[in-house]
Amino acid sequence: MSTTAPDSPTGRADLGDLAAALAGAQVVVCCGSGGVGKTTTAAVLGLELARRGQRVVVVTIDPAKRLADALGLTGGLTNEPARLDLDLPPGSRGELWATMLDTAATFDGLVRANAPTAEQAERILSNRFYRNIAGALSGTQEYMAAERLHALHRDDRFDVVVVDTPPTRNALDFLEAPGTLARFLDHPLFKLLMMPTRRGMKVLNVAAQPVLRTIGKVVGGDVLADAIAFFQAFDGMETGFRDRADAVMTLLRSDVTRFVLVAAPQRDTIDEARYFASRLASSSLSVAALVVNRSTPTFGTPTVARTRANAALWANLDELVATSEAEHAQLGDLVRDVDPAPVCWVPMLSSDVHDQSGLDEIRRLLFGPEPGNG
Ligand SMILES: Nc1ncnc2c1ncn2[C@@H]1O[C@H](COP(=O)(O)OP(=O)(O)O)[C@@H](O)[C@H]1O
Ligand SMILES: [Mg+2]
Image (cartoon, rainbow, N blue to C red):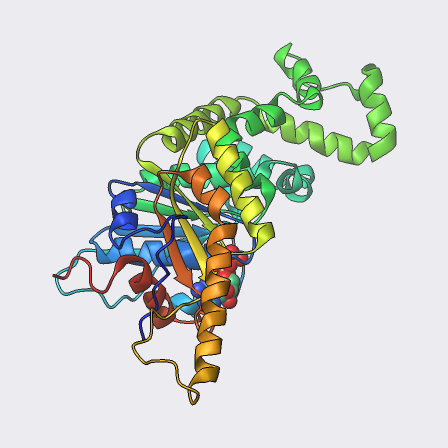
């Protein structure tokens, strides 16, 4: 049975509009609140782009095994991209890879790649402050997501990176990753700790600094000593970190990046989506497409006349149509916010998306049957 969204003044994309919105993309960022189908959408977009002959990597922050299962990755998702077994049109050079952002592993890799010597890298990696605290510092996850995006975008194995953002309001904080990094590196504590080495002193004399003496009393001398050792070992590496953060900013603002907003027809997710749209707008970025997932399916206008015998069926249908119309009305403001982006309606399927054929069903609803094949 085919499901079509009703014609509506509140926006509906034709098949092909979403593909057009993604044409030429090297980075696709999916955003929306939790549970709307963001991870599923990221996987579906990756699948479609691979079918169109692109070598795609989907990077998720979702530790849920569902995506790994849906994609057929029995080993689960890891920080290292894994290639999926796809049933692609013959002759297609498309590939689909998937990876999960592991903040700690990404940070470790960066330290190894950027420390001037292996010994300095080891000093940082084995530092207790680094092991226990660095990953938990505010902004670290967003910052590592930006670093990861930078690395995957430059990776010769991939043409397109599809990013599944965290289901939080600060999901778009990585748009300000350089700001986040600057906050980290320009933190008064960091500056204070770095100062003595900048002045050429070999050993920081904690006792000589009244502020540090106080901090030491509060957090414990060992913790402070670890933090100092960490920041000192980190000295000199900030420049590379800043440069990459700037490069990511430029990438996100360039015309090879597309933001796809995902919402479901419920008040709270619509409000979140409107928040994301305004957040993008305030960074002078626009929404490339809006996917309204889990909408109420309607089945077109039946060709059978109403009779007493099928009255119950008709009542059921009338209810679906009324619900669907209410959903379209509810989405009106969001649709206007993202105008002229195409709005793609995906109905609630009869079951969860737990395998590639489920993903493919959504793919066909968004893009039509066999792109690139005919
Ligand atoms: N159109 C749909 N119909 C039915 N189930 C869906 C649909 N889209 C997503 N799901 C299911 O809803 C759940 C949440 O989807 P997910 O993509 O993980 O959401 P998010 O990443 O936004 O939290 C998953 O179990 C997924 O299989
Ligand atoms: Mg998710």
